[in-house]
Image 1 (cartoon, rainbow, N blue to C red):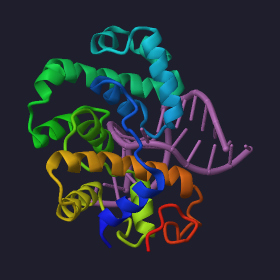
Image 2: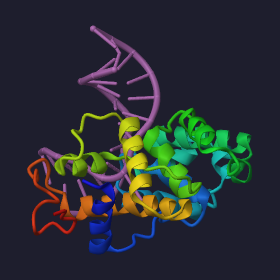
Image 3: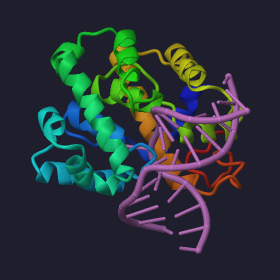
Length: 221
DNA sequence: ACCCAGGGTCATA
DNA sequence: TATGACCATGGG
């Protein structure tokens, strides 16, 4: 099955998702950390708190005490852990020279550096790569595994890097447009997977035929 | 009351 | 390499 076919079904069913719901690259980075294993609605509250406290900046996050920052991001859950992770990230980000410098790094070097930050794992790193730095990286999440396992494309036992490599390689081959268009497609595809999962694949694991049933919006024939 | 959400780290075997 | 414990809020 062509991976691009699934994308086309989702796009026709749901339309553009306009991700990432953040105004600036830095806000996207903060959101990527805060949304770890957390509903986005809770992340929105935490970001609103940061904005209200005039603390949605690298310098503010670095200067707040861990407990002060934790209190602001409390609605996002895991607030002590995430306060530390945000400060780890911002310390690295500032030391590296911020967006102006990092935007010139190679895809590989940037990804390796992101993964070296304590608190930034593969999915968070790839959210930042794709949505903040607009690099051609395909984000793998639990929804992606579930949906494509149900479709019989993958077994579910593949590692993160294996899946990412498969999506990137196969989509680059199936999609005939240029790199900027492919990046935009990766952007939309991941957002559509999340949309589809929340909308149509909520019953689990009973929905073993999800995306194959007629009533599924992301049905693939 | 229970389940899970746009994960990651660390200790242990 | 591969599990398991742990982190914690808020909505269904």
